[in-house]
Length: 301
Length: 322
Image (cartoon, rainbow over all chains, first blue to last red; front, side):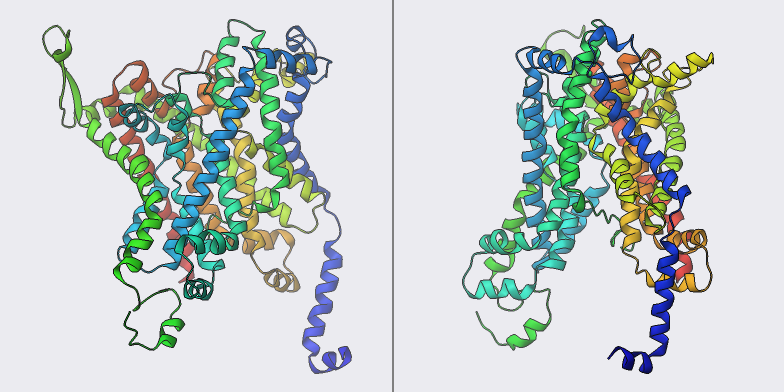
């Protein structure tokens, strides 16, 4: 069989042989390109390594011993941080999980249903709705934070969890991505068949379309999770009660106190370490979902 | 439910799911009901704040009499007064200048490194690519406040290992937290946090190119570097354009990094970046009207930059293909 193929299509076999030899040639490692990437990796890991070392020192050692030398006080620091104002730090961690986790989940569901409807339904005004949503992608979110504050103040919602959660649920970019995923992964025939069997539209979306869009939705979730977790200005503006702070605003406040009380610095550093560990784990576990195709269709449009 | 057209024909034209057989309820109400949560949130948290900011930006407080009592302060139409104030404000000009300098340092460096890393990851002669890719992408998991905090400590002469080395060698190094160095200090934080994300965007784009193209060039005797520069870079140009655009928009809005670094240095004023100025005007000085005008100016400048950039780049990068 293989001989026959070779006889009939010699050019293909030739090309395959050439490709194989090229592959063998490429196997040779390049120390330069490997080296450059390793230097980049070291640059990126360095602050993480430093915070691991620094959080093992007590406040006198922090500024006196060599900065990359580990010490033995990591556990003491964690206990001290946990006792700070009756476990306020862990309250911040919980708040962050609520803001980023619940916020991103809600955002993903709403992006998914909007994207699904915009991809799979035909209705009057569809083009206008999509164009207006798409313009939202270009609106710099941070610019909105201050007017959002004044509008929420009108209805008495500032300084509540809602003031941080609600503004971040709408994500025009998430809707845009969801529309692409829905168009690509939910066959119209399946929707039609479910309708013939009498399934309700919400049921079809939640039970049939949503699972089909699965992997794409994980990407939207991750994007939104990082966006919320990264958004410093919104909670900084909205919240006055430090019981409601996310970790970022809380640690930034602790750092401010450090100017007058240097013992705060150890708490800040330990807090920084503890708050990035779960994220790093989540990143490593979900790494395969980070296939970021920003340019898909966006430039051509 | 009058099905006069052949149902087979309806089926073959795929996207319009229920053309010709829907009632008003199913054709209009159902899709809008499903879109409702999105539309309501969009109106409440994007459209309304924009309209409200525009509205505020054309108003000002008028103080009558001594400014005491409930009726003494009233808001009046201000015309373009607030915009004139913003555009003639030297503090605003200075903050825009600082952010432009910051962008000129950061964006070419970040995107250049991201592109270099992406191309190296794509080269089959690179070893330990998985490790490097993960390590370089990792800082994206660290929010700007925490990364500013980490680097802020590393900039302190008492903590920094670099100063330790320089001290031992007897060299005198200017502090990155000094007035001249702080722009570089902030650019480095943003570089650290952003290079991996942009690298992944470009790398994903490289991966979607069928490798036959490279094989052909390889057979024609093109070197690895030639393939990278002549074939790979032009192919992923759209991804590079998008990363540049996103980076520019982010640059004009820098807020978290300088705000977090402020306790560690005297070189950062409360109006270092345009957005810090807006924050100060709105909350410290209680002047929401000029803060609104400044926000609108920043938003318009962002739009202008994005459109100008897209036009210029699209002509150069995509114009040749037609």
